[in-house]
Image 1 (tube, rainbow, N blue to C red):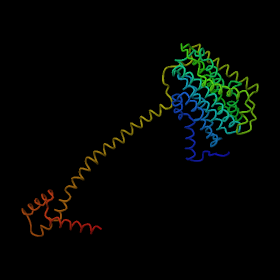
Image 2: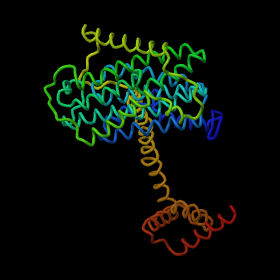
Image 3: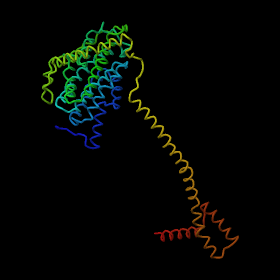
Image 4: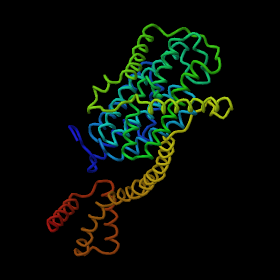
Length: 420
């Protein structure tokens, strides 16, 4: 399997596997990503998209290649974010869901584990760093020039004054949508081809569905609502030169890797005998893109497309929060109830009883030792009662005669000796 392979062979490796899964934003473990990325700084989000999940992809490719569970995990990752992204209003959050979708292709390829699948996963990770960084940078430029606006409902018509940023965004959208001559076309298809040749028809169909969904929410929605769509009335200036330079470099490599994939293929871990630019592949992908775009136009014109609401969409973290609240209430009722019972029984009753016994113990011990002696010496009746009362009063005021104290101590020591 190669250096670094771990595999699933016990509890320890399973926990390592799940740890990578959290970092990789697997289903139900992903809300940290969609909450963190949109709230990061403009430049911070670019670094997060390049390093966080990609480190997990690299670790999985090293440690768990060919693990069958990753096939289904990756397939689910490609599909479920589509539904969230379509209804999401925040465009950086849309890109965050889109990132989970793209990482799903990589995870699925690692799970398939063949040379073509692993090459596809690695090459798509490289391309995703480029086009996702480009998309996050273009949205960051929009935020920078509009004073922090990033919602679909607040943007639109920016192509008039930000044409270069718009072009860069469209290049990133074309790359993530696997348009021919753009980077996603030469890497994503390798994973799908590996699934098809491995007779995984269901997985292949899920990946195909996910490819269409990517075009809908990232390939069209991002540039459409930010730069076209309705006219928001905003007329911000073009992005600063340093932002345009960074976007231009990323856009160049998106086109270069898509148009001349041989250099990218030469960097992959296994020899590549895959040819992306065949007539069936180009025609099939072009048809897929055309009909997906046509569906978006029809849904938009007919009013059936999900509207971008000014709302917060519930995600899997809803279960965490509700489950955490329920756990807190259960712990409050059980543990605090136990504390209250312990306080009443131990502190209020038992401790008080022990204190009362401790206060009377010298008296009980002394009289228990002296009464038999007094009885033997002939002290009886009223005299005995008077002696008991005087001794009790002396003990309570700590003024007992020295003889009684000495006798009591002697008897106590004898008892200890006998017990030992």
